[in-house]
View 1 (cartoon, helix red, strand yellow):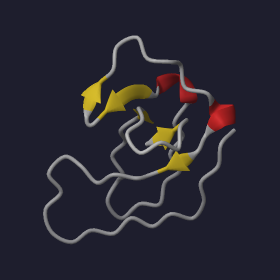
View 2 (cartoon, helix red, strand yellow):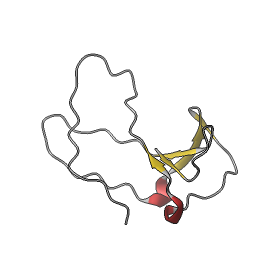
View 3 (tube, helix red, strand yellow):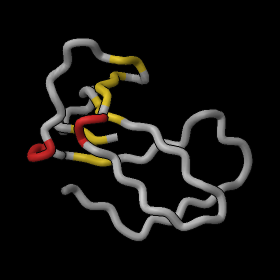
View 4 (cartoon, helix red, strand yellow):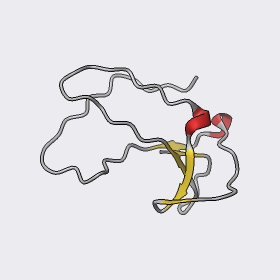
Amino acid sequence: RLFNSATFDSVAYEQSFRPLTGIWQEVAVPFELLSAVWRGRAVANSLKFRKDQICALGLMISENQIGEFELLIDWIRAC
């Protein structure tokens, strides 16, 4: 999730990905593919995501992850 606003209850822009088990991989998420959401629901007619105004980044574990897991992150960058 990426945010263009530092306010508490702002719209988030997200894109899902599923890491492969036991394989190091590089995941690229083009900014054009980000979807606007608010509290898990799609936001119609939202402002377009602006990569020059990124205020926060978050990773969310979803899809009913049960049990222990490991997600190693070497780097994150915006291009």
